[in-house]
Amino acid sequence: MKITRIVDTVVPIRSEIRNAYISFSEMTASAVAVHTDAKCDGKPLVGYGFNSNGRYSQSGILRDRMIPRLMAADDVSLCDEAGMLDPSRCWRVMMSNEKPGGHGERSVAVGVLDMAIWDAVAKAEGKPLYRLLADRYNEGRYQEEVYVYAAGGYYYPGKEIEGLLEEMRRYLDLGYSTVKIKIGGAPLHEDQRRIEAVLRILGPGQDLAVDANGRFDHATALEYAEALNDYSLKWYEEPCEPLDYEIHADVAQASRNPIATGENIFSVPDALNLIRYARLVPERDFLQFDPALSYGVVEYLRILEMLRAHGWSPRRCIPHGGHQMALHVASGLGLHGNESYPGVFQPFGGFADGMPVHNSRVRLPDAPGIGIEQKQNLYEVFREL
Image 1 (tube, rainbow, N blue to C red):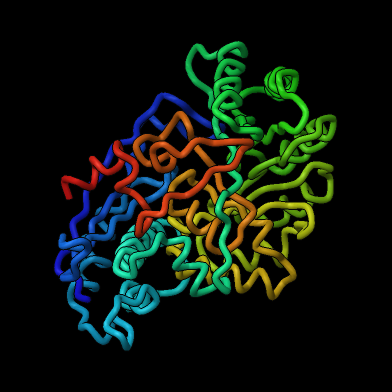
Image 2 (tube, rainbow, N blue to C red):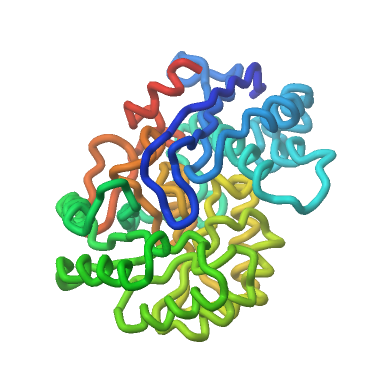
């Protein structure tokens, strides 16, 4: 199985929404197609990949370093003994001649290609990716349905509390029992009004999570933690700078609500430091590392291995991103669940068409690969590649 061509493009996912830290008015994403010499149902086998929202497209790194390295490598460097593309070997080729550290942009570029390579390998084996991952790394066990929560509640020009409640009711009507809103982009008293309004429309078995997107300094993160203790929340997410473990540790101690963090941590060393120094509680808190942003599934498997060695279960992991790749990872590797974006970041947000959410759970398609072809508006991006 040889890579014959790799094509990439930049896709706008602009929106007027904002969180506490950034506006999405200029947001872009990279999409790649890895062409191979293999056939699937008589057609050329192509693997597809893209990066999650929140990190811009990576065309420079892809075109200058990662794609040329893959195209220049020989079959022995990229394939296993059976001649199948090996994602781990491809990963090593992409990361050749790269210094350690500095994770955050190249990790996204590698993640885009890693996704496409896993898509191609799963298609070649005729399996949906979650089954391939389960067979290789989880003794064949996978979740037929995966827990998902609806992420939204962004700040938007002219969007008052009634608009927020309308959005939340829409998610509940779609079948989600957990919803998430942004905090930190307004004064604390205003965020409390928003939180209390949403809590009033939730019924038994329904939960609210809040997300500060790393906005707060030490004092503000603690002020919010104390204020949020008045509510029973699914979690308090990203209270501070992702790599400031001292603030994390103080917030984790002050908060009676679970802490969730990790979406902006992109490597095993940074994840290890979070576990070592942030004083998170393995029985309470949640980890949100996103395989599409953190060097792909190859690195994510290493993160899970590190977590087990430090007393953390994969069941405490719930990836950021709201995309199909993370959904497969959650199913095949036995994670807690996955984020979902039912209303934003199209065409990348969301899952296969015709897969309804029931009680915050969604089934995965049986199609080989990630199933990008099963999401029509997303497949239109890749059809051109």
